[in-house]
Image 1 (cartoon, rainbow, N blue to C red):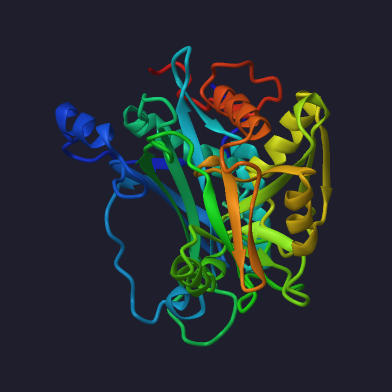
Image 2 (cartoon, rainbow, N blue to C red):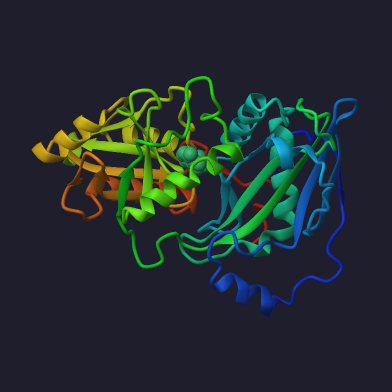
Length: 374
Ligand SMILES: Cc1ncc(COP(=O)(O)O)c(C=O)c1O
């Protein structure tokens, strides 16, 4: 039970007929990602006159939108993605819910949307997990993916910050990203496309950033690569991110390894996994820093052996090793193509904390009100 005071009162309406247990278990056995959803959702409305109001837990259902709804035209919308894990000692906890609440506010501010108080964000998670905690899978590395989102719901074709906004929280059981073991990826360095530019929306979690990246991802696939790597938009020289994940570079090996991740310049998404690994890397005794790396230095480091591992990190896959790089200027391998020792050690450390198999020494698990439920 959280000691926080509730900021808004939720009206609770349960689905009239819950799915039979056997059917829920069948769906949970092989959930994939983002394909199935739980039985409830949270909706909270905002308008410029009343602020946040009308908070509801309701049956999960399609939305009915007027074709003139602002978000369909001008994309004034933000979202988050976090996971709730079944804990080794029982109960369910969401990983770094407070940090996701803070990033959701920052994204909203950048998109001229109202900021949802962090307490209300957490309350929404409590209310949904209390209703749907049985949808949290129990298999290793499976989780309940929580997707908070907010969009301009005013019906208007004039371009202005919406005077009506809808917040939703939905949840989707999610399987292991690597069901057959961690698999390194090959990346394509995108020189024709940019994900973000100074002054733009790169640091916000907003749909337009992802829509704008799809063509570059398709180009990467055409080049036989799994993922696109984004470079800075002016020189196409400085490494920023990989697809929907942040990047880490490991120099040296063993206890003397040094970890570097590109600094948050305003064009990168400030990943919560990135932040967690900066902390855990230090805990494990590595030298850890935020800096910058050029494409030439990435290649030279791999060729002279000083750069031993590269990995991407994010909520979906935790850590994905990068095995090879392709670009119009050449291709090269990273290490021996296998997941590196430092990458896998960090991965285990984080996964163990997430599912309560290692002490939560940084207070990252949010048990909410469902901690007593199994
Ligand atoms: C563009 C981008 N970068 C990085 C990340 C990693 O962020 P996080 O670790 O918070 O999932 C994500 C995923 O949310 C993303 O979409």
